[in-house]
Length: 79
Image (tube, rainbow, N blue to C red):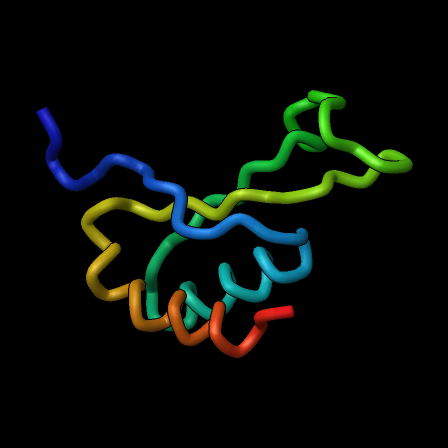
């Protein structure tokens, strides 16, 4: 049974971009959690000991409020 408190992945990117988006979400009081293979001890997907990507998770119940912020962030940070 889902109650809206499940963590959902909302963004995957470089460590720098993930931390920038996390800060932006926290400015509007949306808690976010970063998961990456480097911190969890996995070695798949690494180049010179640097993780290739990190994932950003939020509570499912915060998604509606977070979506415009995430979409704007992605649009402004496209490579």
